[in-house]
Image 1 (cartoon, one colour):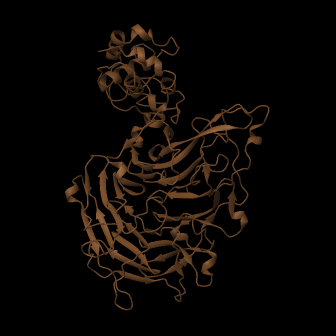
Image 2 (cartoon, one colour):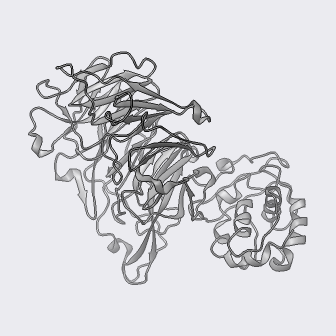
Image 3 (cartoon, helix red, strand yellow):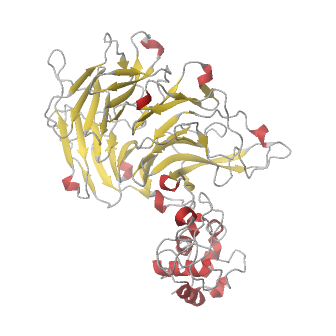
Length: 579
């Protein structure tokens, strides 16, 4: 084995000082827990490979590797400029076990604490020698909220992340990228590029589980499996998207996903069967087994086929796909595509209003949530109501707290819903961007919803910044209203709502917030490097395993309240959130 030591010192300050964190020490906290690591073997490896440059563990200084995790050791050893080393994963695990004992031969019991970027404290006690993950506080894991060093300062629209099954996907100016959050910590600076990512739209893509549907500028579709690396290009005679929107990802009509399904709207003049609505099923690892299901175009009152749809959505649990055309809703059963769809007329003159085309409708179970243009509202004013329609019995429910903000998010999942109200000036908050008053609740309680307060604001949290002689309060131009946001997501089980800003991050107002049905709360910044001391974020997205967002990292310039800002990828691993 070659020496680990010499080049490790080059990255010691940048990498190693953040490694003694909950994530780094969380494989049981002590030397004996976590995957069969052997501290005695680690001592022998250290003596033969590292002592010459790093000396005795525990002596301190930039060369000291004490307390580092196996991942941190490997990251340093494989960093650019480091001599090639021949160490196995087991070697790194053994070294970490030895170093975690302070240089002694611990028996697999101990605690590891430290400050890491996006990781925090993780304590646990290993049980026995080599018995896998230790048990204890945090179960050997790091903090749930992580701010990476993956920069997201580029194209504002393209960099909206989307969340899948332990997967985050986003685009930038020239490609599409992804990470596996459970394998990513706060030191990460790079991501995985989707093969030939430059061929595909950097904002029009969809995520289903671990698979990503990508779209070329011509509307051609590829599905890529991030877990296996397999992919499939669908024939343009079978699937060819009608809406080739390359720069905006929030308008209706783009591809939607749920479970193993992608719902698409197609160019009826160019696909062979002439059908507009198609669902791609991507169950399993074999791309050849992925299927395309087409649904017959419905007929209008003149018996002409309807080929232009404004919205499409799919719900895996009910096995149905919904599409909207001319304010009419059509619902097909994926298992029996040849059957005529259910039909719900929401057009003018029906007393049910019409469907706004400013935001994608949401579909879950038997309900469609949409921004409604009521018959009695002049359409030119852009005033909408948040409304629900039960597609099984055609019952329309208009929420009590309205009007809604017509170009702001709608969320629907797991028997819960969310939208934003804009009835009066106090229902919005403006600075660099605009956020709106949230309205959330359970479907069982509709038409009632819980509105955020118009007056409650967040207090400043602890921050590393010292703007003396100015007080930090003088550097925040306005206090953030609790429960106001510009983007919203809801976990699939309907238990947690998240709010953030949109686009460029406003250092005063774009708080990352969460609600479990009551008042929203903010998050302590894991690095204490925002003026507010809270996590500041935009463009939040949810899945069952992860919440993704663009996060703010600031640096004090020493010039009054001035800071230098960097936007990076942030995320929350939901399984680590305390109940």
